[in-house]
Every structure is written in structure tokens, then in C-alpha cells.
Image (cartoon, rainbow, N blue to C red; front, side):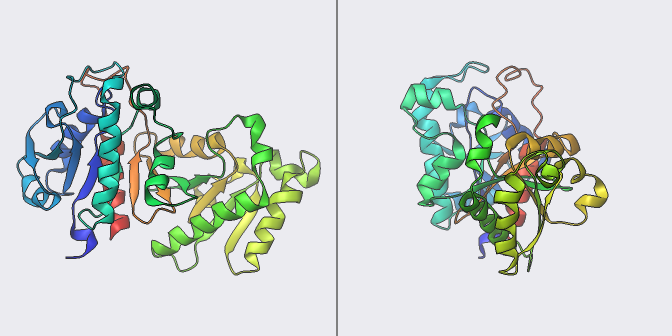
Length: 319
């Protein structure tokens, strides 16, 4: 059996958020199209559930209900209210998901949203977020976040830092690392020499230094050094002209300098269907591009579109 024939491991995330609801809704829409199994408490899933004892059982169980590799999370789920008492179990489910993929029992890992404060309050969670914890578990020092939909793939070179801190964070070494990881990941996805578009930091990509010197001093030298190695790079490009349809046709993935520069275009193009992909891990990891949505948890309004897209992308990448 090849890895792509195995089920996807799906960690439940924060039970009080919309995770259990979108999992049930995704199974309702997908049926057995994409076999997956949930790492979580079977009592939290609002729909038909099939408790399994091993991931291999998911391939048949998915025809009858949501396959769940059950663990008792303790207190009942309270939709819309962060529950630190679940924190240790949420963390353990993620850890188990990584182990299942690394041991060859699952083809990929898809993660439902977590609530970082609940994890810190309930279990002293010491990592900035999901991505950093997964890198820790995999023994990888550097990973890259990519947001993807059918029309666009984009990587923010810096993520959750204040805008004022971005210029100092954009060193040649850091940008080189982001580009190398993005390039290697896309080669693994089947692109012989991926076409990577790189934005500038400043308006008009600095306009020759009139609007900032980061393009001259950091970005262009970095790109030139990597082009000399044979990487297919374009840029630095003005971010305001990178994302219309004809521009997108010219590259496979775009690298932007900061969070909003990357996320605004993809959320404008496909707000519900965007997928978060972690590049640089020794396994495939995807997740919905949204949070726990406490404000709508338990109301029946949660949309499973992004989770379904994340499962589909995990299957494609695993193949």
C-alpha cells in the first residue's frame, strides 16, 4: 500500500470551537471520498461516529460515520467558551497525529483550529502556535507557512510580528531560507523548477530607493544569489500588481514580505476555500485557513469549505 492510500489523520483542535462541527459537516459532504480519522473525543462530534482502535480501520468505518480514534477529553464540550481543562488532550491529539503519520499509519496530517490561550492556560503550551509545535515534534528547525487555493499559492516571509518589526526581520539569511524551503517543497510537489515571484517590501518595490532601500540592500541581492544557482525567481515586484489573473499565470507561488501583503489577496480570491500548508516538515500538514470561531460555535452556521479543501489538498500532496 502506498502512502497516498492511507487515511488522513485529523486532529480535533479546540473542542469548544467549530472544529467538531466542521468535521461532522465535512464527512457528511465527502462520505468515503477522502478517508480520514479524527484524533479526539468521539462525544464531541455532532453526527454519526464510528469509534476505531487503529487508523487502518478508518478505510471501512468512513462509510458508516466519522471514524474517531477516541480519547477521553474529560469535561463536556461547551461550544463558544474556551476550555483550558481540555488543553492537555488537545496537545496530545496533535502529538499523536504526528506520530501516526511518521510511523506510516496515515498519509498526512490535517489540523482543526486550536486556541493558543486555552493551551497556555491549561497546559503551559510554550509554542507560538500550531506550526512551531509541529516543527518541534518533527525535529525541524525552520518551516514556512503557505496559504493556498486553486488560483493562488502565497508564502509570507514574516508572519505574526508587528509591521514595524518587519524590516529588521527581513535579513538575507532569513529570506534565503524561506525561498529555499518554498522551492524544495514545490519540487517535491512535482514542479521541476518552480516559478517563484517575490514581492518588494515598500510601495512600488521601493522605486529605486526613493521609497525605501530594503529592495536594494536585502531582497535583490538575495534573489540574484539564488538565481545564480538556477532558481526561477522574479522580483522584487510591486505587490499591488502581482495578484491579478494574468500576473498569477506567470508563477507557481508568490513570496511576500509580511502577513497582510500575502493574506489579503488570497482571502479576497477565495475567502472560504483557503488552506494553510506547512512547508519544510517531513510529512504533509494542512489546516483550514480560519480560527476556532467561538462566536458561531454551536449555532449550526460553521462552514466546512476550508476543512474540505484542506483534506483534498492533503490527499493531493500525499500522492
